[in-house]
Image (cartoon, rainbow, N blue to C red; front, top):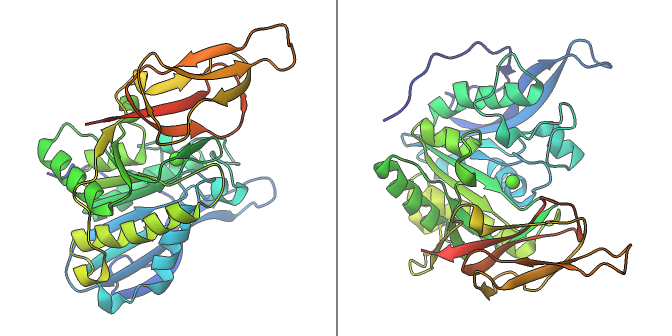
Length: 338
Ligand code: CA
């Protein structure tokens, strides 16, 4: 069942008509009046590709500005998909936190906000809050399904994976599970962000959309293997929803294991300032209590390195990219088989 809410007024306007058949590539324009531009706009790119009758699938990239596989693949779909191939509508948003994308950084260069911690947003707030409010009030109500393509960004590197968004609604949970499986990444992981309700995916679920996430590589670079996982995955999910013919997708390996980030023990946080030496590569099998790495205080050789340990059984799913750490930095995440 879809949540209906009164739309909060937004000063944003669009250069596309969401109800028109065919292909349009344009912008959602948010009036923005910084120091050097009294009457300007922030332009968030959007493409609408629509034909016939079928579900509306919303695809987001650039939620964080230093995660590149999603924006690349969504841009390709916007340019290359033949509307005649579709039954339904795609709303393609490759670079949603546009200021973060232009700055190639996680958070907005304008207001410093992490877009994915601003939902449901505020139409009278800062630019990032206005964009998330527009997603909540105007984009999600048009959708049946939502794909949010993330990667690890500058600070983490991941096993390329599809992410299952948890929800209290058992019927939606089953549909999220099936759609994430259809993505057919090497690894599929239930990621609840420790229950944070301020993410795009949590908000899409509350609006009743079937929701799929991803974590595709990372390290602030484009990962070629992750890019091919993403190119194949988005088409598989579109075929799963019936928007493109299954002949345009690849066959799916239903036997791949499902993992979960099980609460706070999944994460290994830095306990000291220093240089983190990880002991294991991505995909290594590890046990709770096992040594995970050392933090070296290289500027003070008399100090014995601090040892970090895993708190969960599973595989090393994510690993911090920069060696330099401060207390509280996420060094590792362990995904536990279901
Ligand atoms: Ca991300």
